[in-house]
Image 1 (cartoon, rainbow, N blue to C red):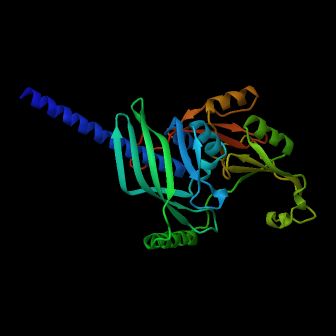
Image 2 (cartoon, helix red, strand yellow):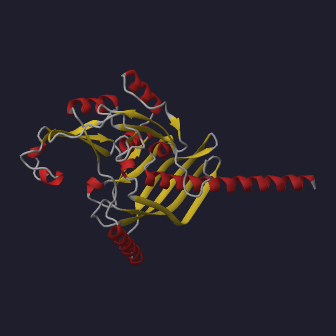
Length: 336
């Protein structure tokens, strides 16, 4: 009787462990898609083992079925994160896991075969599209947490009739969405500055942005006077475009006409553009560097739940928020 009870408890423990593993694996793959969709780069990278690999589409080959392999989490960081690829997907893709799906778990490792539908949009005027992929995931438990070791993906033939129906449905939904609003994202943020060279130095040397392009005479840009509402004879100034990962910050210095200089210190509650928020990896280190260089900040970094941030003032008193994101909470998860 005792042996029967013991064996029964052991079987229950095994079944419970398997159910917990299946739940955690489902959560891991859901987070992979969610973090990709919202551009949460730090949380996305943390899903992978150090020796992880991933097959990604090889767009340069011209073959829609071609993939190239990126091996090692450090290479995933440099090739997909540091160049802004993951963050650039924010708001432009939706990953949906779909069946059938098989999961095999064995002593701290697992293999998952699944399909995924990825809906995407490339920009304002590009039609929404989709792709259907077969994914083979290799997973490993690291200190009790499931992580991704590898992902081998292959596209599924999208000429199949039922897939064309999905594409037509996705396209019609995308068209309806674009009819309501043609905005697909923020293209850039523009800041009017009094000294272009000084502001370029501040944003590049202090905050790490890079110069993409400069124009010493904005009046030479065709249509610039028209779009700004100034006369050709009056408009004079210079311009620079800076990159913050995949995002852009535009600096414009008008020599003519003279702009109104704000009086007093700008506060977050002042009417108009409140602030520009720039994402950083280590908010404490950034504030320490800025304050040591004499940059005025409103406070120390503050924990706001989903992120930590502080405000600083730029060379012309513009208010800048420096923000370090935490791992976002996927839909359906308990809020913190």
